[in-house]
Length: 113
Image (cartoon, rainbow, N blue to C red; front, side, top):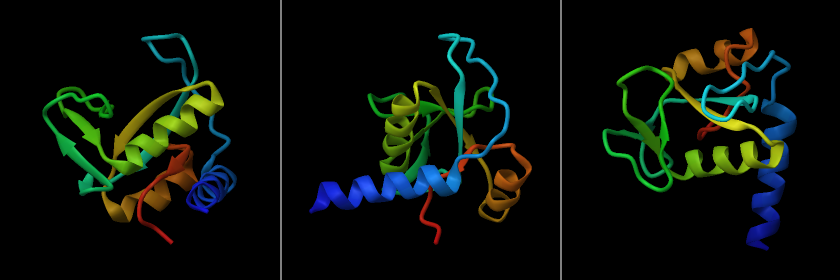
């Protein structure tokens, strides 16, 4: 049951959150990127840290550290399924929706309904 709920949630995120913005290639792998916006301030779902872990992703702003948490792990799983590299963009809560609508990010993965 739990796996079915997670699968339904991922499908809903993909259908509702994936933008049609042109993806730029990642410098690391040459793959396209899946850019996800989140606040990185709401543990255990997403938070900013200065230390790299197995599950963290470097923030797109130079020297900003890493973002980690459940939302980051979900973002990585979606990007892997899309064959893309995940990029986490730290954006204030009020700026998430406008960033999605403008094509700055491809999805919002956060506690938003």
